[in-house]
Image (cartoon, rainbow, N blue to C red; front, side, top):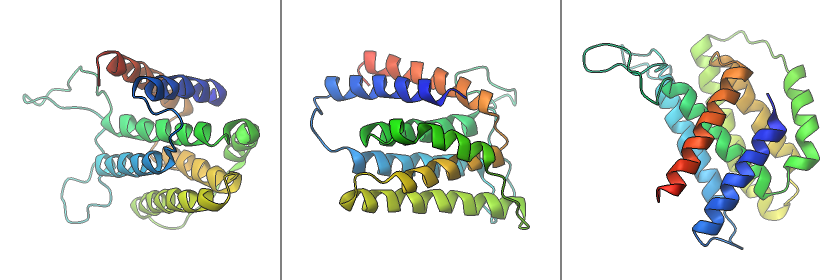
Length: 194
């Protein structure tokens, strides 16, 4: 996955949004972290594995139309789309806080070397992974309040998020392609006055 390119693409989108919405000079970290948590909740909702009260716990990986056919519309894989929406905000947080350039290489190495084994059930592990990311996002906000150079916390956030992608069965190629597609959609939305 070309993480450097994705950081750059996200910066271009964020710069456009900031300029067009008149947000220059504003601290947007709180909004970005809350948006990440909202998207993470939406991703968990599409995953559905935590819904022990439901008979329908299968992940939403395609859209079914009213006739029971797989829909051929933009939302080809709702779970992947929500995951990529989270990635947009993680990249934005790294860009806004100038964490990208200092840790980009280390992030990629850590993710490649990470190989934790687990003895818990699959749904329990994925549920824990979602909670770890929520917790890390909260910690990141508070750490950045007193230390703008919060590299370790950001690295943990990214590492845990990447691990979640693996646990959900996404390849790096799928994630990158979905990111590119959604980035283009987000630019289009800005052009249309979103």
